Length: 203
Image 1: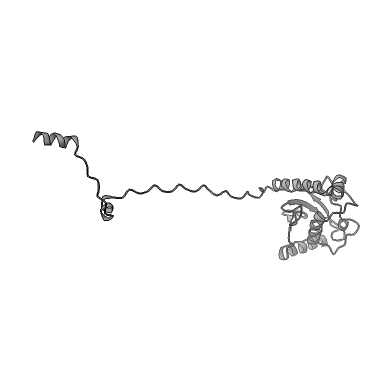
Image 2: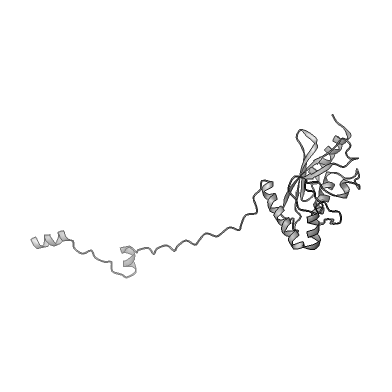
C-alpha cells in the first residue's frame, strides 16, 4: 500500500542515492520501508575519526509530520547519547520539521558527534569529562571507535608493512678453464692418479 509516508521515504532514498552526503549512508530494509539501517563514519581530524557507527531509523505513517525514532546500535560514549542508543537532538524532538529528510537527520547526528551539547546531557559522565577532562574524554571516545571496527565486522587499520630482510649476496662464480686462459691464467693440471703411477712402474 502506497501512503504519503512511504512515498516520501522513496524520495528520501532516491536523494541519498543521487546526492549522497559525505560520511553517512542509509537504506530501508528489503521487506519494510518504514525501518532503515544507517551508518555514520566518524568525522576526520576529530576523536571520532575512523569510527563506523551503526544506527536504526524507525518511521511511522505520520512521517514527515512526525520525527522518526533514531537509535545507535553501536556502543557510544557521548554527552547526548543515552545508554540505549537514543539521541538527544533538538531536530528529533521539539524542533522537528517536515523539511528534514533522512540525509539531513544523519548529517545532523554526525555533526553532533564532535560538537555535543553538555548542557543537555543524556550521559552525565560523558558530559562531565567533556567539560572537565577533555583528554580522558577523548581516550574514552577512542575506545568506542576501536570497538566499532569489530562491531561493524571490519578489521582495524593494517600496520605498516615490514620490509623483508635483504637477500644474501650470491656466491662468486668459479671461472672455467677457458675463462682462465682468456684472463692469462694457467689452468691447474690434474695430478696423475694411482692407476697412472702403477702403469708407469710396470713400464
